[in-house]
Image 1 (cartoon, one colour):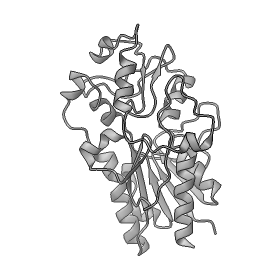
Image 2 (cartoon, helix red, strand yellow):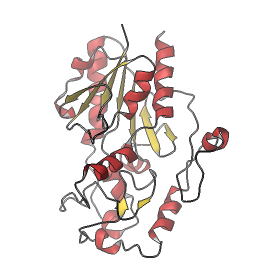
Image 3 (cartoon, helix red, strand yellow):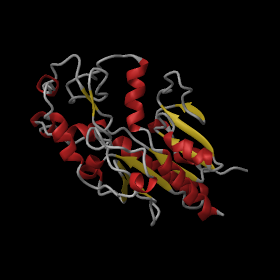
Length: 267
């Protein structure tokens, strides 16, 4: 029987791709199917609010992985007065992961390991992460030995060359500077968007802090500006939604490494 990976806030299935490659069965939970014409979630997807799950339902899991929404943390880390003045974010969706793990472990009669991924900015509100793989910060049962990651994708930087150079640097800083540099680019007006006035924002970021600087006519921001503002999108097209989801997708080298680790531990 294949070991089971439960994938909370499944998104495009970045976690599941690595686990499936290592011989796991994957069941993902999300409130929507992120299918933008490319096939959607690669494992079994169950449309359900994570808050409605009792951990005992997942007692057969070998591993639980989760990527709760990061927009609230990302926006509060923006270099804008409006963002800095916001009240603390609601950590409910983040904390639900650990509730589910605790209930699942109690029902199983043994500890079920879990990895929770989010953004660097979440640390201020939920505690320091155990490790980061580039812009992907990890909490929970993070292995003692973790792979190094590549740096942020910046214009003119070749990330497709020598593998040793591509993956040889563990980047823990420099993203804020990259963000500031991007904000200062000629022709980029962020003031209207900051004030909630722009109908077609040019900044894209499921995680503005660290998951790449996406600027231009195809960019979007897919998160609430503040509690009194609605979600803003420059377009409802599938291509733009897909681009935003791809920014937040767990990279295969990370998901496959985690899958290999827990598989070796259980054998």
